[in-house]
Length: 166
Image (cartoon, rainbow, N blue to C red):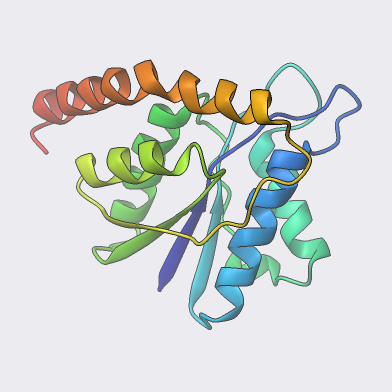
């Protein structure tokens, strides 16, 4: 099994997927095409608009031609850390101990891979294309936003692991 965890992104006010969500799903789908044993795990709870992020991403995967049997939603994660913890529990429940792949935006990838590894998973990044359409300022906004998030989430993950004994 090749689990591909697709990290959630915003849902638009009209209930549709944001461009970031579409790019994340497309990258995961392209990567999964080369893995006949791929299991897609879209993450994300319901936010302010529309359905759960995981549900919208699962629908996008099916629209791209993916089989619903190869998709397992994780609809409880409200942020990156809770999504990692929920996916870790899901994969442990399935008896999976091998590598996992993280699909997200380029700026978000280092944090996702780090948190998955701190959670005890052998995480690797899904190759992701450039974020077309984002302005220079917008790209730097998202990159700079990760600066405090990485150590904060890493410390929380280590704290959670210490409390649970693993």
